[in-house]
View: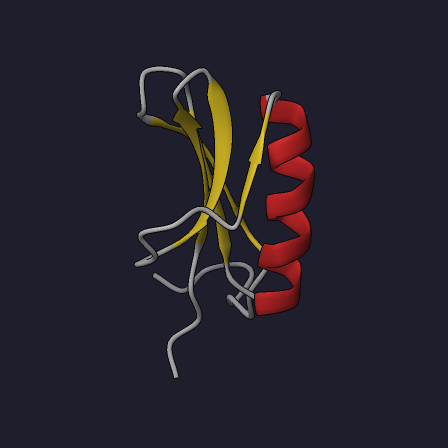
Amino acid sequence: MKKKNVHVVPSQGNWAVKSEGSTKASKITSTQKEAIGIAKRMAKNNQSELLIHGINGKIREKNSYGTDNFPPKG
């Protein structure tokens, strides 16, 4: 089973926490900071990636909470 990444995205003046592939947000908050805290816990529990989007919708930061190799091979 593939682990679902967690996204923090702007949503109608608020911030949404969404699991990848979901149409509905898991949580809507008024601040990005609060959304990031919720999303970080979800990503850690899922051992997946957290992708934080800026107000323009573009990814501005990525954090991995999975079982990635460190340092990466290659």
